[in-house]
Image (cartoon, rainbow, N blue to C red; front, side, top):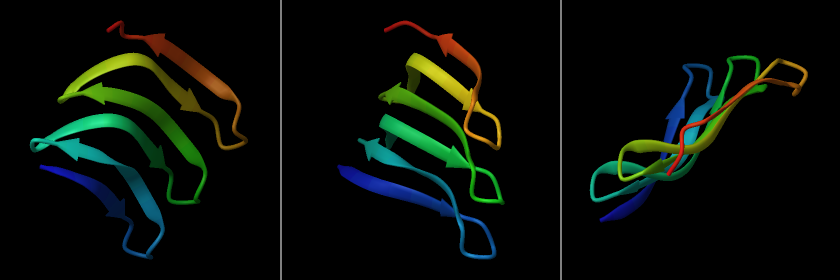
Length: 70
């Protein structure tokens, strides 16, 4: 089974968005802060963190990028 997941803050702003495959996080995911700024991006392979995970500051500049491999 596949699906798109969204997590929402109480005020209605989006907190996280990504996909599931067979009940596990899969593919590209994004997380936002309460103020709406992008906080982190990353990729899952059936629940496992893979590829480059990036954390951003409130202005969109990269604070940290970690390559978790394949």
